[in-house]
Amino acid sequence: MKKEEIKKVVRKSYAKIAKQQSSCCAPVDSCCGSTDLAQDISKKIGYSEEEIKAVPEGANLGLGCGNPVALASLKEGETVLDLGSGAGFDCFLAADKVGKKGRVIGIDMTPEMVEKARENAEKGKYENVEFRLGEVEHLPAADSSVDIIISNCVINLAPDKNNVFMEAFRVLKPGGRLMISDIVLLKELPDSIKSSIEAYVGCVSGAVMKDRYIGAIKEAGFKEVRIIDETSFPYESLENDPTTKAIIENSNISPEEAKEAVNSVISIKIYGVKP
Image (cartoon, rainbow, N blue to C red; front, side, top):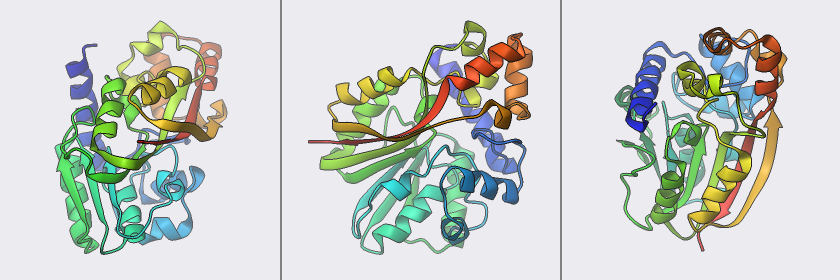
């Protein structure tokens, strides 16, 4: 698929998620979710009960693969930029940490998500949070304007990951930090999965090899790049997932091949600094 076609498919899929409040990008047993399911997903990937309850209802869609806010060491008064902010979950958590003197900017390419996030911000009376429509490869933010960039299971969906990190580097202030949770591969996926639309939207076929991902961050100019944590997804937790079933059915691969593919996918949390 061409880059623009990929973006179109992803945008359409996430617009549907925004309207239905269902999640399709997490290691869980079901992906057609209620609020309870989104909360269950969030607990599994590192959010506390307090964090889940702290945000407006509807902000948490269970779309992440980690908790970048918990590892970001946010300070009062800082400006935070969230790449692929969805309905605003991580933005609202970050807003509480940076306080009234701080600022949080969420960027998402799906109009329906931006609209939902703005509604949630109004509902929760977050005056230090704003949401902008834009692509992570072309950030609607000024040079050297933010202290820290966070992102949660989004960059794997971007066709041009190198450009994402170059843009992240551009908008960060000198000394600014990068704290990302995302999906990467330990070995290449079968071609049938790579070309699967379901696998792309499900955050699988858009993922790249771990070394390539880290290399792209370093090539953009980041220093002190290191993996804070990495977690594998047990196949048993994914085999009943509707997205996984669609991938298997449409890719014509055996359960054994599917299991091998799933075992090559991991969630990582990466840190980097702009010198």
